[in-house]
Length: 298
Image 1 (cartoon, rainbow, N blue to C red):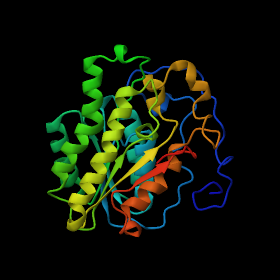
Image 2 (cartoon, rainbow, N blue to C red):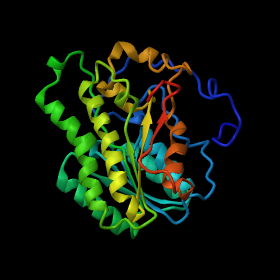
Image 3 (cartoon, rainbow, N blue to C red):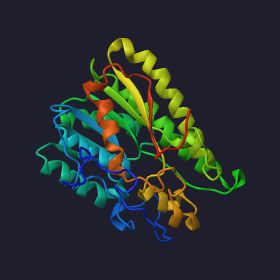
């Protein structure tokens, strides 16, 4: 594995600077149809046993960031449940197969997290199938680019908030019944919480809310031995970008305005989640870890 995450290498050239063709997929998009395919670490992520015996639930675990985290968690020794929309079955089964190949239990749970009851049912199903829960990754997200606030419908605004921030509230509340001291909650926010794109007004607003939700919740749960942190990705190449997450004419140059000069690949995010899930980060609480190719943030 010459390109694994433990090998010394130049980050500028570790992955190629992609120039994705203009393309469109219906929301939420499939990695199976993404051009070029994203790298989730299928062939390169090398585990070191840091999550041995752990039980994790990852929302949005079928592709993109969630898929890379699921693969890494399994290779670090965890059993993994992934939540995804029913239309993402093709991607989810591929990731579940990769988890199983590591000798770990894979649980595939199709659901829509924009419903409170669905979130509660999701947690109970994951706990039943895994035999417990000690890592929760709130990663599912909705991102639809619009040029103007006047183009954002009430329905889109509502669905974006329900998927991106309400779902975290509902899922965490349900999970707390099962999380023991030593457990970890990791929320996916975004560089848009600090540098909001003008075409992602509703999405960026939810990401700012996630930062505050993470910091406030971490203070509530610290004395219970449950750590809460967040990861803030920059421009990463995932199906979210081609299913109306970015203006189509911007896709060929996606990510090239970062200091590193290229878009990130999902596998480059996985180590951040592994760190925050593992006991290595036992004194890290309320932190937002930026993984964005060098884009300045507070």
